Length: 474
Ligand SMILES: [Fe+2]
Ligand SMILES: [Fe+2]
Image (cartoon, rainbow, N blue to C red; front, side):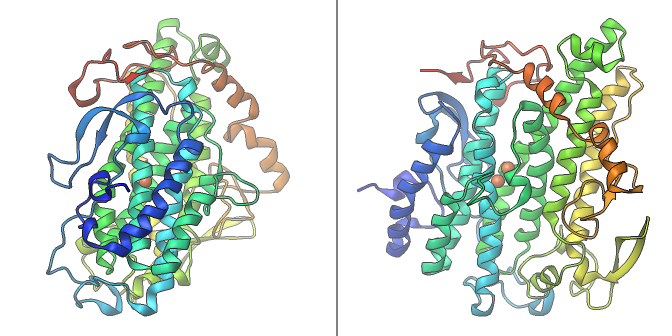
């Protein structure tokens, strides 16, 4: 018998709920089986300098020490309950926040939790081979940190399923360990989580773009009237910030290194830049276009009656719902969406309630644009005349009003042939990926060393020096 109250750090009084303990006793070995199969490749004996959350207090969620990842203490943490919290939007606005699942919303809430939960193990699966081509020990430690935390996010969602959804919840929790990213028969639920993450440029782009989708979804769920979901998501957001940091700084460091080499050698031609073993800015732009567009799809259809009912019923709010200054009902407001009519993209007003996916996507785009502007600053400071741009919202989309259309990066509506002809100006070609991967054929793990194609970070983890031994191989 495992003492779960000791093994699983938690602030939900796990030891006092026998039913929940039994469910977790059943699920935990299956989770470990999944981690051994699908967690980071060949990593099980490594001792990694990781941050482990042991409580939600400021001094408790950032404990650093060496740990073998299979022994990581995947805990269950909810932000402390605010007894006065209410449902803050929709038709139940003003009622006390729900501590149990309202019967009429049970299947909807379960679906929302399963969809979020499914993304967590998916990204671990997508990233599992990257350790063998890491650019430094610092980066290796960071990807492992992201991976164990995505594992913890799965625990967070599985806790809700086990605790609040009975037998259906237990079945869903098992299914979360059975699906596999990219599998033809049993794929992960959402498209972007079935795409491969074949190299470190893709990894940093993924953590910048797709983990940020995670942030926005968690922010919307943190507004939920179902209080345990809200409290779980609030704590997950503290960890998500680090994942986006890894992505943003990773791309920044690649750009910085490329610009250094370009300046030193007074070169701008991508082929010549590549010949010096760094990633040309044009390729970085194509990776950006790809990850941005597949992540935009994660927000769903521009006009959605599901999104409207999630909001009306108090299940999923808007980004920063309680900070918004309106009636929180949206009964008579409107919101603009875009549609392709003939060879033009037109703007159209629809009831704001039905456009909540689009609104969350727009909030996301705003934050993304700020991040891309920060990358641009690195290029500008190097005095290189290259502009990183965000493609048009309709570019390369598979879900919503743009699906089925061929939109260029500048928003031009094209024929299929015209789009295909320019496709690899805009999206990474097999040759681009082959080039990027050719830089990453082995791992760089000597403490303090960095691969040629990336600049060192400004500082180490938890005030440790850059040449600290972040991972001990055994
Ligand atoms: Fe996550
Ligand atoms: Fe994440």
